[in-house]
Length: 139
Image 1 (tube, helix red, strand yellow):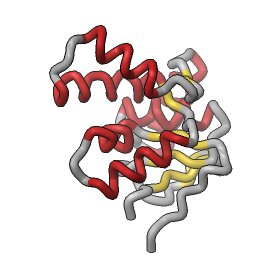
Image 2 (image 1 turned 135 degrees about the horizontal axis):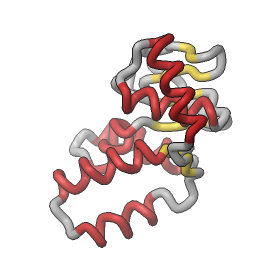
Image 3 (image 1 turned 90 degrees about the horizontal axis):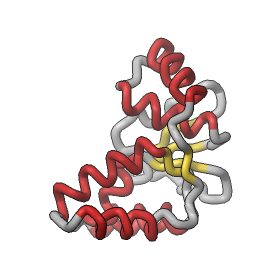
Image 4 (image 1 turned 30 degrees about the vertical axis):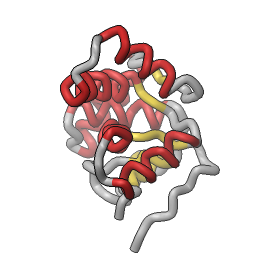
């Protein structure tokens, strides 16, 4: 069953969703564009990962990549990796055994009050701290 993209609620996206903005898969690119058009919460961890992957995929000058990234996320709330995010990430690792970078992304979403984190790589429909549901928008 295909998940409904719930853009009326505060939501975040994982890096893997944004990578499809540059991909050849038209369905996944369209879904990523739709999600981005609703100004999701973006963690600083996602931005770092996104820039790292785009640098390898596109081989453009660093300055150009940063300018394009600023433009791409200009209307999205950006969550810094704060002490509270890192503390929450540690709790999430202990409770859910997330990978380190995933725990920071999930913690940023929880700390921001998001109800959904769209991710292709994490456990589908996992409910984190009775607040955040992880949803794969491509299923």
